[in-house]
Image 1 (cartoon, rainbow, N blue to C red):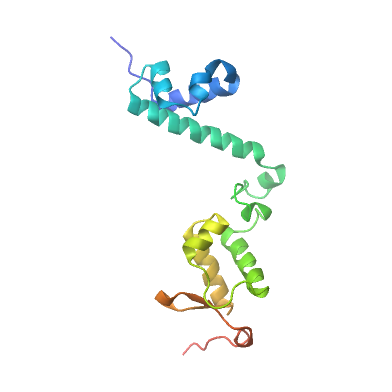
Image 2 (image 1 turned 135 degrees about the horizontal axis):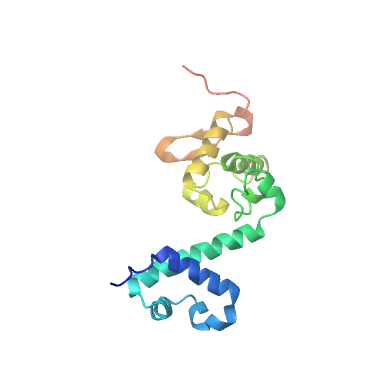
Length: 169
């Protein structure tokens, strides 16, 4: 009777342990974590080796993020957004509030006039999801800084009109 093959997560855990314990002895596996080398080393089919590679890379990335995280991040909610340059400055705040603060400052400096860049472009700049950008834009629209115009886009309200909020009629 043969034993069932190990799950790919178990193989990924083993690979990560081997890589972090003795990186010099596993040079073929370390060269980009080659799926073919993983398949040969663990005697598994190539598709399984590809899953093992992806899972091992994810685990290694998580370890790297945890190693970069400061003790202050742990005290402020686990370092949410620790890889984003905008969000790691204020880890205790919600991401959409941090993006809204930066957009508010940029509007105040006059960087945006007329149409605001697309949500996709802003999400790329801030390294957050489009949903987070949408929440930030909605927050600024509620404050009267932005004027959403549906498919036409979102526009920066002129400084003279910012004091007057739109009527709710």
